[in-house]
Length: 114
Image 1 (cartoon, rainbow, N blue to C red):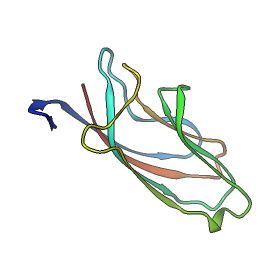
Image 2 (tube, rainbow, N blue to C red):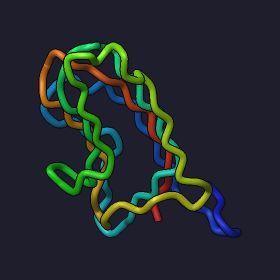
Image 3 (cartoon, one colour):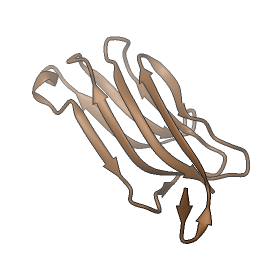
């Protein structure tokens, strides 16, 4: 990926988060992961919490809680951080977490390491 005339290693990941915590894009020691674009698709109408974190057990930067009327809530989200992206903590990767195994969601994420 080229940013301002410099080439950086592209990063992408697709994961289905079904319970607990799962890595979407792994971190690399000494590198910072910049996220450019994510598509989030919620496949269930169950109740629970979905979140994206900066590393395993790290800072939550996207979270949604779906209550009993989950069907009426949006089932898809697009997060666009632009050409330069949103930086995670150096060495950390992108993780997805769900509070219950009854709620699945799929993440497609694109970014680069710098």
